[in-house]
Length: 256
Image (cartoon, rainbow, N blue to C red; front, side, top):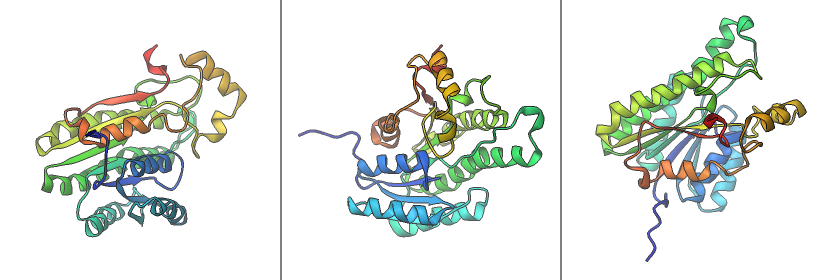
C-alpha cells in the first residue's frame, strides 16, 4: 500500500489574496491535494468564480470578503472557517501589494499601505489562526515572502516592498520559535518572478526579459505550478520537523 505523504484530504486551509494571481494558483494546488479551503480577498465576485471550479472537483469551499488591513475582517475569516469546517490546519498568507516608486519619492501613504498589507496583514492573520491551531496542537502557516526579502535590486524601485518582505522573513522565524511548542510550523516561500496580476506588465516588457536572462541562472521567470510542490510539502504532515525556514523559488537568482 502506498502512503501518500502529501495527501491533504480532511485538512482545512485558508488562503488570503485568493482572488487572483498566485493566490488562485496556491488555492488550486491545495485543492488538488484534497484540502477544503476558505478563500479570502476583497473581490468577492472573483472568489465566487473560483469556488465554482473547486466544487466541481469535490472540494468544499467557503468564500469570505476580507481586507487584511482590517483586523475585524481577519477575525471574521478565522471564525467563519472554524464555524463551517470545525478547525484550521493550514494558513497561506498570500495577500500582498507593491509600490513601484523611487525611494526618494515614496509617500507616507504608499509606504504604510505596502508595509501594512504585506507585513501587518501577515502577522494578524497568523496571530488569529494560531489561536485556533493551538487548541488542537497542530498547524501549518505558510507566509508568502519574496526573493526580494533577501536581496536588493537595481532594476525596479521597490524599497517599501523589499522592507516588507524582509520583515515577513524574520517574522516567520520569530513565530516559528514561539509556536513550535504548540505543534505549529511557520515557514515562508520566497518567489522569484512569476507572472501574476501584479507583475504581468513588468514581465512582458522586453528590457525586463533581457534583465532576467542576464541575472537569473535559469534565464527565465517561473512557470505556473513550479511552487506547487513546495507549497503542498509545507502544508503537509511530511514537513513536521521543518520550521522557521525561508525557501526561495527563483531559478537560482539568490544563489549567485
